[in-house]
Image (cartoon, rainbow, N blue to C red; front, side, top):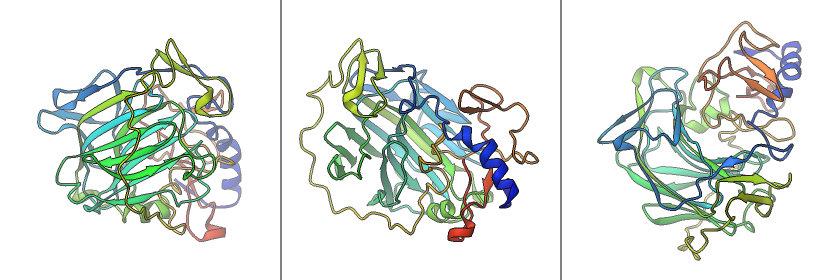
Length: 369
C-alpha cells in the first residue's frame, strides 16, 4: 500500500521501521548470533532434474521436471518463488546451470548472501536476452549504485548456461560457461565492501516491474510487468558447490565482519585451501552502471544508517496489506528487533510503500520491502 507523506510517514517509519532496521535473523555486526551450519565439503552436486533437495528450503511454488530441473514461475502479482540453502560456505565456488525467465520487468536471481548482508549476485532481466548483471555488496551498504556491471550473455532466456562465482579472501571471479567476465579484489572493491563472511545460496525469480514497486526498481527491471503475457519461468537445472573451509558451523568472533574474525567450529577457515584458483583469466573492461540509475536497491536494498535489507532479499513482498497505517496487520509480530509474518516460513511479507524521497528526488520510494 502507498501512504502519503506527512503524518502517515512519521507513524510508519517510527512504529515499524525501527524494527525493520534489524530485520535479519540475527545481524552479527550488532550482537552475538547463533552459529551458521557449514557445508564444509567439496564438489557437492545438486541435480534438480531428479527433484528437490532436502538441503534447500523452498518459498512459493517451485516445481521440478526431468528436463529442466527446478522451475520458478511468476504467473500473477505477488509471485516470487525461491529456494535457499540450509548451509553456508566460508569462501568457495558455486556453479549454477540456469535458463533465465523472459518477460518485461521479470528478474531472475542467483545470490550468495551472509547474515551481515555481504552479497555476491547474478541477475538477469526478462526484457534483455543478451546480457546478465553481476553485483556485490558489503554489510548491506548501498551508498552508491556503481557496483553493478553488465556482461554479454546472448540467449540467456533460450538456453542453459553455467554461471559461476569463485570466492576467496583475495578475489571474486564471475564466469559464464567457464569464461571469466569479472574479477573483484579487496583493493578494487569499494571501501569496506568486499564480501567476506559466511554465505548461504538463494535462487529465484520476482517481478521487479510490478506496478506497485518503486519507480527506480521498475526502471531498472526494464519496465512494468504485464502479467497477462505470462507465465514467466526461470529454470535451475543443477548446482555444484565447494566450500573452501571445513567444519560443522561458522561463528562470528567479533562484530567487525572481517573474514579473519570468522571461527570454523570443528574445522578450519580455508581448510580446503588449494582447491581455489590462484589466478583468474584476464577479465574484460567492466562497464559499471551509472549513479543516476537506482538499480534495484531503491526497491530492495537500504542504507545501513536507516535501513537493513530484509532477510528475503532480493525477492519482493508477495502481498499488499491494506488498512493498517502505522501498525502491523493482524497476526504479525514485532519483537527482539524483528518483524515476523503470521507463521514461520510464511511466504507473506509486508510491502508498505511510502513517498519518502519524493520531496527530494522526485520519485516514489518504498520505506522498506
